[in-house]
Length: 478
Image 1 (tube, rainbow, N blue to C red):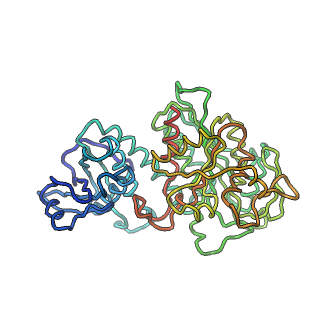
Image 2 (spheres, rainbow, N blue to C red):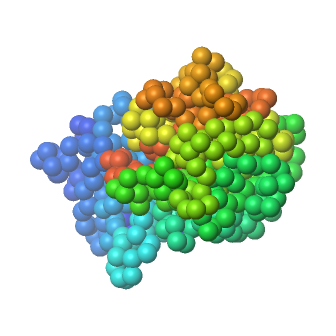
């Protein structure tokens, strides 16, 4: 559902930002609570009051000089939670004394309200199974509404990616993900989608991607979306977006433990972010050529599944010894990266829920990333800071290549050593990234949550990580 940005007035609820300690000049009901210590202004705290037939929200944003976009996003989520039984129209009153411009406040509050109001229980059958949605967000200042509209679009696309990641694997598998991509392309004039089936991938020599999908009745797909805007800023630049979309990952022959395996429907979160990310680029009409390549497969054990000890040949001709079939994400990305370069991508960003090692290192907030180009690395880091899809740089170094050296083939897909798990995966991918700037984002932590994060991601499941990062990255190239 799209949230409309409207002019202030006649809202079902009005939200006022409250700092810590509460500022002077609050409206009487809030001022009384502040004076009694019942409204301390802590980040994410919200108090709902009734007055004159309407509702008034006091929403905490913390210490005034520490307020930033992330705290305002959390404030937006707190407001959405308080209004879960009401929905309707929420009007935000901005604070000109905060260390953010009014447009930036409006954008952050809008994102937080929409992302924070997301409900994952779309398969519940009871009518009152979830909160009511905020349908309209109002601002009295016309000058900030454009920023809020852009933020609403990105938040809505983020929630679309969350829906994909949360969809059960009996409904979402490579073929139906491809259908979702084709439907997305139909929404936008300059966005097209093509889908490669196993026979077409076989003709291209994609032995790595095909092997991963061989164990499942649901055959793999390579999903390709192209965005060709009229009058691109730089006709020679093509932003390549590559996404891992393992729609269910049982680990293959190297099967995972049963506990938590249900969450492996979220192993396509990188592909979901990539899909909706290029959709956001198209919806914003950014003058940047873009290409998205999404490698979709199920990794299941069966009599047809690939095995430890197999040697595969990837599309670039390199051979890969299989050490662990649960290290499958890098295999599907290998062929997808090659294809993105083949199709003209000059600058590549890949997104993948790739390694548990990265989640151990950074938890559920930052994604770690690796880049082969300093300027590209800086651009991605800055886009993460602006968007809220946070990234943190990790090292690439040729000496790490020895971790994937193989006695029998050009390389192996995993290491038996419990060292540098995320780094060796990146070194593996570098073998397929081709010439030109490339970065690998390992979003295993923030891509799919086991529990709410305590900020504006209040519920478990898919987060839509990558949509806002991609949009900001593309904007910086426009």
